[in-house]
Image 1 (cartoon, rainbow, N blue to C red):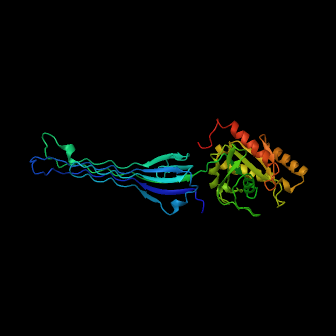
Image 2 (image 1 turned 60 degrees about the vertical axis):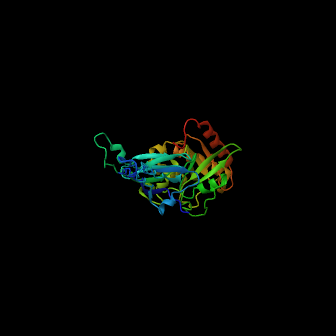
Image 3 (image 1 turned 120 degrees about the vertical axis):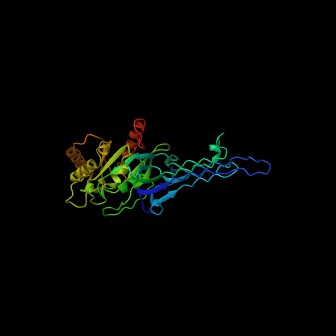
Length: 344
């Protein structure tokens, strides 16, 4: 199924039922009086986070959702039935905004969380509410109020602890396939990853974290080149970024230092907040070079970038250095678990 992370829908709450104007007609009650009942409230529309969904693709086919209208009031003071609420399931991590005003309505970042997005209409009153000593046969009643109608923008942001960042063919998909059960496509050409993916990395019997893989960036991504930067939003909830750099590019004209700077430039253009997130440098594809040369290139890269943070030299293909990396990531996440939640 195609991954869809944005959708626009229209939600319409149910109208309230109208009140009833009615009078008692019974054989032995000559002055029966009014007995019109109230209408029922209209149903409201809710969005609910469902852990079983991972894409907004369902909203490509159905874009209009309407809750049930309240039933009209009836004679004998019978109140109309309330319209049923409509609950629309969406993936966990869906951000909901009003498409007309740009207002942020809510963030469904927890499984089972429910958000009301359209209020049902209020019920109308029957004529029993209007009787008085001077108005013994009221014919007044009130109609139900209309339900709320809203256009909504839904935006899915994946929930992950760690995000992978890098140019196409930096080895992100190979790494996530090595450390988790995820099975992204891997090939010897750029942009094999077209949509974001998640993998659960299990470090021990009780220790695990979620890793996100997004399509690679290229120079000019902020202006729309390649796949652009539309998928970078999926890294905004992560607590840690792993910046993968191919230190042994097949094209000799490529320079790992320039490649790393390209990614950092595009990242900063997209979001200074994302740029400020904790970021580790991961020099990948060390298996393609002699051990000493791989270490030399990694040291040169750190020096050119003036890198002060953690750094690792690994091979996603062979697994060299990968265990040390994921153990260090797990230790970092456990240490900072109380300081920052990735889902806020």
